Length: 335
Image 1 (spheres, one colour):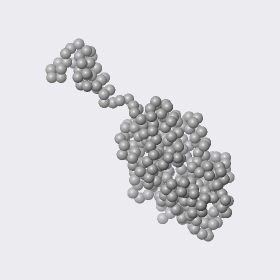
Image 2: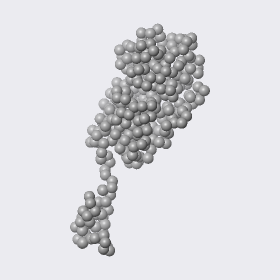
Image 3: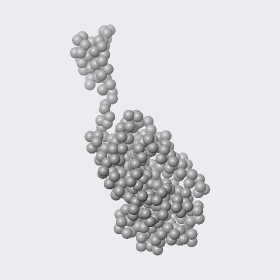
């Protein structure tokens, strides 16, 4: 709306010929009209344009599937487009950097997973908890060690015995990841385990089937097809309680074996820390609706995730702080 149009609108309401160069006193009606029109020019309703959903990993993975499941539901509820943008690289750091360089206007949110978050526990973290606002923890999955189902090891006792005699290689996402932190912790307990990074999930999985690695660290949902088809066998989960998924009831968890490390895989949705509170609240509310939907509950089941995965904004930050503290403490114990 042009300045001239505003003045004409005031003239119509006030019944006078108003010109800024003249020292007329505006009537109450004219002042109200101007006050009503000018803010509408500066501040459009939110959301009035697409909300970009950054996935700091490539298409087809667990983070990508989360974003696409949630974006479909949010777009329908808000009546806007919620495009998923894949920005892979450096264990998720490239995508998070993109989020933190975008305007803090609620127009961009991102998936932040445990593998990326673990980098904050090391030296020179690429960002900090003060850089972000966690809107919700959307999914928690037991992470664990998997072996080739056709190989010689059937149980964790088998793997443990082998690792006490010779070095076993563990396919991990990258150095400094939750995978690597956990493997280094077990190595500090006398097991001969060595992390071998594979940036792409397919490379990690084929390394087990091809004999290029002995163990792969992965969460339940990401290797479901390999488990369901009888190619992978879980031998140990790193989870603070027995895994609440019937097909894995027989698999021991780390705390039962005397290992004080869990670091379960989680996927949160975050925005920049300086995003306006009203927009943060709206996005958090929409994610709660996503978590309550039948489609999302089906997604959790399909991912072999904890059915009680969701943690709203009120508790998401505390969950992540506790997780990060455990990661930092575990790193200290391995040095």
